[in-house]
Image 1 (cartoon, helix red, strand yellow):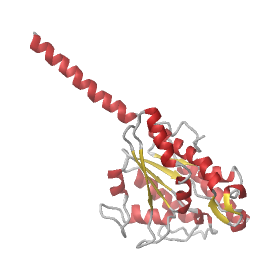
Image 2 (cartoon, helix red, strand yellow):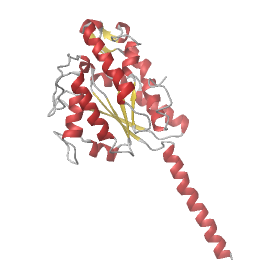
Image 3 (cartoon, rainbow, N blue to C red):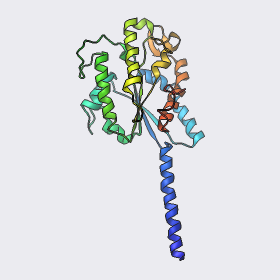
Image 4 (cartoon, one colour):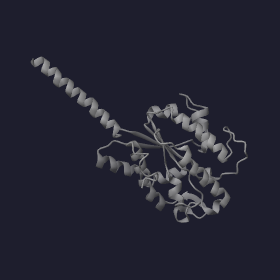
Length: 264
């Protein structure tokens, strides 16, 4: 009887450990996050992202580990992180071998639970459509972007155990563009939010464009490095970095579809 009681207690103890571990995973403890970016992302990163997560982990007893990485690098691929480039590296040249020294999704998803990716502001230099969309074109046209985004969506969905967070593209200051171009950009990112994005999958986004423009067409001058430089300034970076971090946490904790797209 004592022997049988011992094994009953042992089994209960073991199952408690297992289910505690499951609950722990659901809460996102031990999650590894990679943030892929160029210069605009670097500005936001330096606005306090690592420190925010350090404080959050300490206060909430979590273990969210966030890293940043330039993607793609200047060499050998080139300083280009537009829709074509993510499509080129992650879809067209997918596999377990890096493409031109850049990690594919097959590689990234083995090392990270959450993958955050973005474009720098030249993504907003959007030319008029031709009526002949081409998925393999590097030309910055909405018709091409849409094909590339659709292919990327299908690719990311092949990794249901991972979560992906896409930034809506960085905007340009008024002095760096024109109204027609700016309206095309807004139309594209409205499409991303209202049509491309689907609830219930493993893909989410952070509405950086909305934070930069506040409903307008341009990066607000008070948020820009200068009226002619579309990099965000330090003050804006410190303002939105916590929102970026909160958005990541919301996604990790399965609240990505029910909370603010800006992290507010």
